[in-house]
Image (tube, rainbow, N blue to C red; front, top):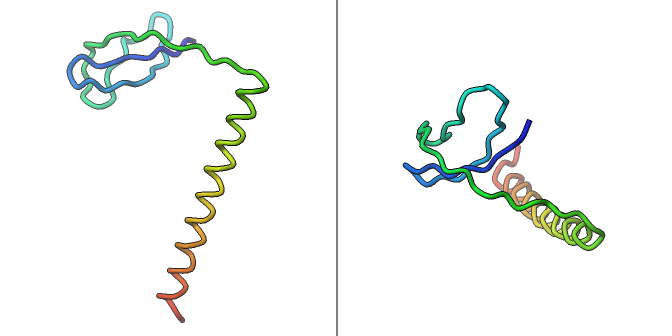
Length: 82
């Protein structure tokens, strides 16, 4: 079952939809309009360099999230002494 990218002509929201053969037409998740434009999807390319870039981005994102979580935990502990 293919996943297609669409742009809503009424509210301009872009989204992806799983389209089943013989199924209902997709509708915009924001405004429920069926006036959609099918977009051209860019194929995903996987290689050693793209994998390394994705891994680096994930590590950076996880480190930032861990720092933020630690800050929130410290704030909570400071303001909630039991």
